[in-house]
Length: 428
Ligand SMILES: Nc1nc2c(ncn2[C@@H]2O[C@H](COP(=O)(O)OP(=O)(O)OP(=O)(O)O)[C@@H](O)[C@H]2O)c(=O)[nH]1
Ligand SMILES: [Mg+2]
Image 1 (cartoon, rainbow, N blue to C red):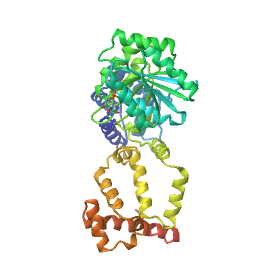
Image 2 (cartoon, helix red, strand yellow; image 1 turned 60 degrees about the vertical axis):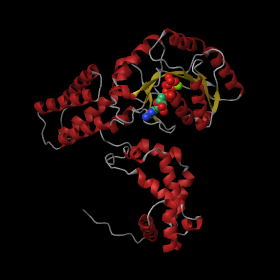
Image 3 (cartoon, rainbow, N blue to C red; image 1 turned 180 degrees about the vertical axis):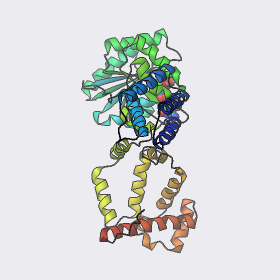
Image 4 (tube, protein in one colour; image 1 turned 90 degrees about the vertical axis):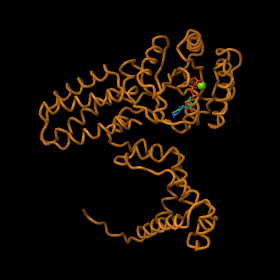
């Protein structure tokens, strides 16, 4: 997500930090470079102009004191303005009604139905009800039903027209204690009258707590044009970007707030239901500028692990009792969070580490080919067992050896830590 943009901005920052002095000419050159980088990332050109002027003005207002390097000041100013561009504070969805209603709108294929599932997972503790609101396309209904199954939540098919369906859903939610209703409306190739009249009817008679416009992150500035059109005709609460994986340049995410006034609530970079992130302007800006994003990572980890389980694991590890069963569980927890490369992108300085996902699949296969006893007590894994495990997991004995070697090293380290015999750290 935002990789290309981020890479170039990080590089520029590094260059600036290397300079002892920055004269007006050098600052102008840096600003020109930022302009090019943003335009290349497909940020709206007017937004880019305003952004550069804002950075310039802020820099003029600030005095470079002895306590700060000129490069640091420029970088921090760019960060501040980027946070501002992205909307400053994290926007909060007001979902206080019971049931609260979220209506997802947007053109065809932008990712509404998938997002409905992602939101259902996110709001799982409020017992969401997913409602199909596309009377024309039976496949749309069965797609949402399948997604509801994956998200393990209730689903309601379309019955009659859209409005009747929404009203029936509200009644059902009241009798069956659903705290949130998510409406998956029908997409169209273009904004047409029929779609608008359906959406206006929902707005007028169903009063959603939030109407979220779903935008495809891969289509660049067209997404901003769509947002402008939708906001002209409807009361849109905010927007969500999907498909920010792959080659998406991300410029639309940086432009939409300034151009349309719409806050961004969620962003998503993948088809899995867990691939959803709340949009925090400060964290996104930090991530784009390569400052890492530990808090998001921490929240992600917490959302998939139980604190109790983590503590027990830490205790076991420190006592040197960490076995391959724990190792496998840990591995699965990490995989549940999505791809490792994506997670590493959130760690400061680790954004560029290449991760071979196949390696993790291999490790999982090897551990799965062991008997429970072998996992609990890896010391019994002798030569013939190694051969059997390698065969069972479709790997080689060398692969099994490697895994065991790494495991033993980690266990040894843990034992030393717990006995106070810390290995000497080399000072640099
Ligand atoms: N790579 C990627 N694909 C996504 C993402 N979100 C959705 N998709 C895919 O995009 C396609 C369209 O997604 P849908 O959720 O069906 O889109 P929709 O807006 O409901 O489409 P209509 O109901 O036809 O208007 C599907 O193949 C999804 O799997 C995402 O964040 N990343
Ligand atoms: Mg759909």
